[in-house]
Length: 24
Image 1 (cartoon, helix red, strand yellow):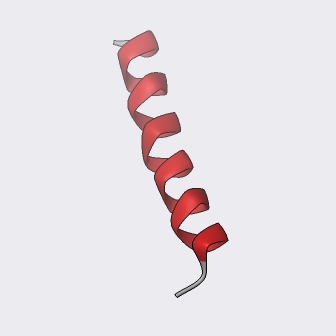
Image 2 (cartoon, rainbow, N blue to C red; image 1 turned 90 degrees about the vertical axis):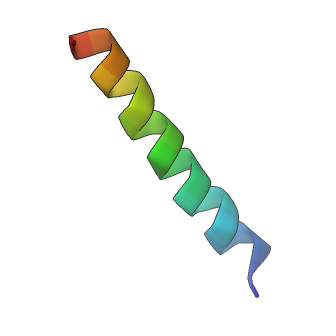
């Protein structure tokens, strides 16, 4: 498994969560 892939996926999820928290 590529470690970079997992990090990018987690970053995308966290980024989406932060955006929802800011806009809501």
